[in-house]
Image (cartoon, rainbow, N blue to C red; front, side):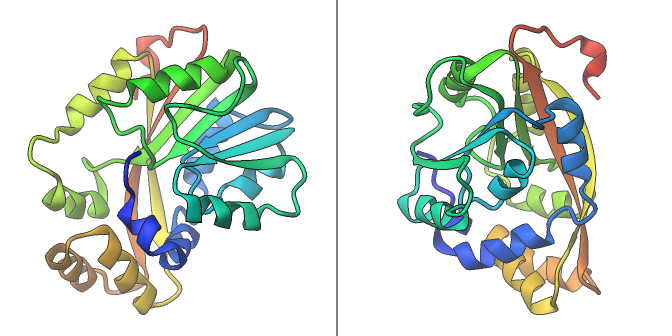
Length: 236
């Protein structure tokens, strides 16, 4: 299990962060293009409090959320209690509680699939995907945007963004880069969210650099289709 101290220790504050993210729906637009879930069976790996589950449930045939941290899994169950076609499982990415060939889309967002070391989870995603199904990995892009410049100051020694991208390319994933805007309701929310995502020094610097309520944030969307080799020209 990979610890996620921001959402594990601050789930209510992380909820405000989720509401602020991608206010123009740029990431969702890419997801609908490469992994349309309308009428299909969806698995969200590392679903946390289940923030994205109702959005998938609006159009999907069925939705499964997998979350290893018990308190977050319980919050996800509460969020989706009225949705009969949504199930939340307390489990990890390396032992998915679903049968082989049972879903059409495996989605994860800033969870578990961070590069080298996540091969067991990739194998599990492939196991549960039907032929033609899509795995999509959404993560922050530290190479671009104002938010990326702050993240680069906090990266652990030895982290190389180009190595992470090369890892996913070697695993057969295509890459889409997505520019988004985060918009907070108050300056207090902005300060608090940056305080759980960045080191204290960098968070203070970041707050000083943002005069209003919006921050530009870049993402990487990696995706691959089971049983399909992705042509190199689709990496962009």
